[in-house]
Image (cartoon, rainbow, N blue to C red; front, top):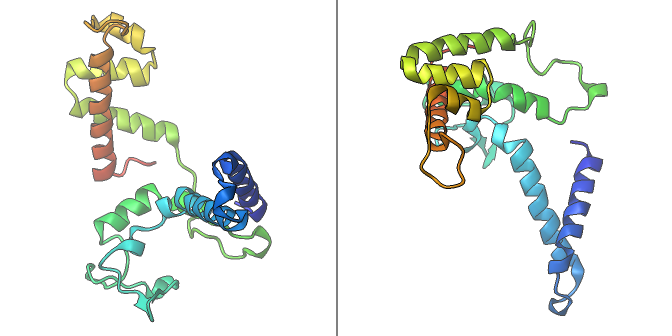
Length: 207
């Protein structure tokens, strides 16, 4: 995000909250400062903190010097790993590498005109989403029962609407004003999500 983007978000937020200001409690300046401060914290949380490496808030982080974290990656220490550095020996760091590091790098505010060194030292950042999706489908087929996989196939491979899936599989519901098979499909989708997450955590399916 550029400064202008953030400024516009803050102005819009102040405008939306303006009706909450009570002029009897004093000047508007301090109130605006609090609103702006909270909005900036939310922007940082939503765009950067949620994607930052877990080491920043980890009790095993030994990179503090003078009460501040060292930014140089070569000095980022860890008392949990055998190597003594923040690396994939730590399960949380390894998970961050697989799932959030690319997103964090994309969101980093780096000026293009002064950026000479690539953020990520990789030959390519290309991901074959179709092949990765097909591999996940194969893994899901092995982890699901035949009956449950039929529902998974209809929903996520053939991409049919839930109503059609319920009709094909004979799902019904006893709830008033609910579509057929509402609860059954809801429970199955929750189960599919749990199993898919487990597969992606345990195996590298990104191609």
